[in-house]
Image 1 (spheres, rainbow, N blue to C red):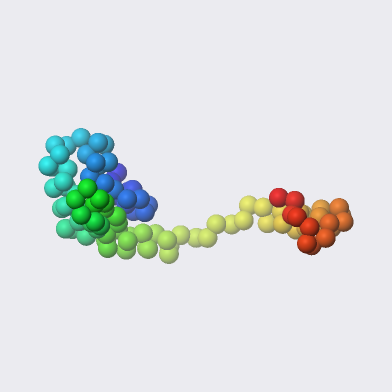
Image 2: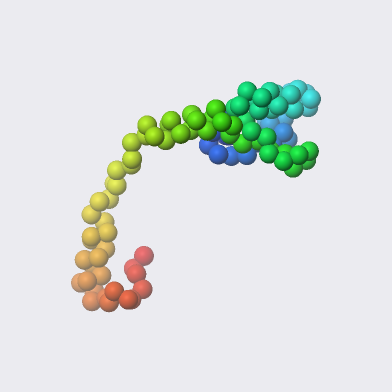
Length: 100
């Protein structure tokens, strides 16, 4: 769960990790430190302001996923043309405020 959140680009804090997983406080701190050691998370800041973000390993995985993903197809390819034709029918000028 923590690694998935980091993969999506969210910050992970010790407090949020401990409150969800419910290990002993020291164990939670060790878990996060170990994940940072392995390159899965990267620690930012010190003491109370510390948070963890995706480390080099997760950033690499994120990059692979993004490059292998196909672009989304426009579900409404004719919509902008329809809006412009309706504006023309209504006699609107180009400088007038748009309909949407």
